[in-house]
Image (cartoon, rainbow, N blue to C red; front, side, top):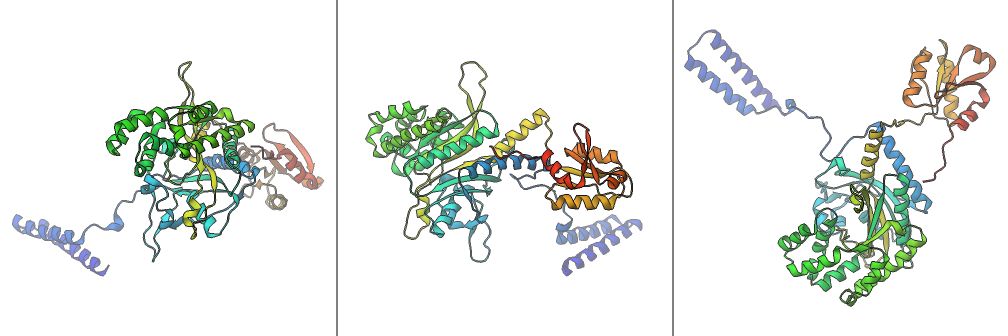
Length: 509
């Protein structure tokens, strides 16, 4: 800093010298010589970083949330948490960053999207990419073999964000998982039931849940002639079929990943099929696929799964889709993904999927990767894509120009005359102590009209009005903002009356 100050002083003095020479009308050569010295000094000084223009913005792929947006998010979270609790889940939390080696090798081609942190004194750390791998680490570390849990928290991906479609670098995941050794397909069916309950409750539009099984995919790749070492990378290509055409996927397989064209064609015959339990039964009889023990196990489990889905009343929302691959390396069995359907533009057309809004599957080997003795804990779970859902709900509210309340205030304590601040403070304190959500304006003598207008703007349903006459009679005037109806309520009955008028509905999501 002292060196910079010294240079700045030399620049100032040299600048004055140049200006003095110009005023004295010195020769051009002399002025140019001194200007050259000034420029040399400025070059030595360099730019002043503290004075550089600072752009005030959020980092790429992140955003702030206004009170209105947060109110929408809280309602969505309430629906999701209510459903998770209804199914008996406990809640846990884990650190936002993990040891880098905990996350390494769990996400296939998506591993490049992990945020690595700078070395913080001996530990190489990364921001969590999802909530599943930290959950598996938690199970192994605590030697747990049985838990039904949910976890709602932020995760981080160094992706190219498409924020208008609800894709960010920092975003929430809402996960529900069942860990433990149970009879086949019962927990898996419950996960699909939960997914359908939540998506139906949120009323964001028609949706379809695609299901497949990693064992069917691996068996199919094997009989089609995919080399063992290319299974996961080809799986990643197949997973793009919901976004691009089969021709583009085939070109990637052949051109970029070195798969033989005839092998790609054989894969294409399978992955373009989708249907219900009848397709499962058809593939069980497929002369080629039935040669694979893995594929037969997967198909057998899917047949059982459809029986349970039928009993749960959601089979009509489920489609067996051979193109569903889920690019993550840790899946070992049933996999599923919910997509929102776009209404067909022409009669007779099939509804189009406009993006994944929930996904999950079975991962029986992940916990064993962290256990010193390799002990496996079978797990199955789901994750709700809340950012995508928030975007859809926000767009819908904007289109309807629907007003969203950003507070839960039940009553505003107001006064009709001056010099009643003390009485307002006493009453609002009584209401707070009784658990009533109440406010008052921070003015000594606010006008009654301003207090009523504040209620209308904030969506506060009731006003408790104090006046000199009311104080004498031991009553409070309770006014409904919507109907403007006013009633006198005895002060000791006020809390009960406010509760009665603003009772919250039970959790029925």
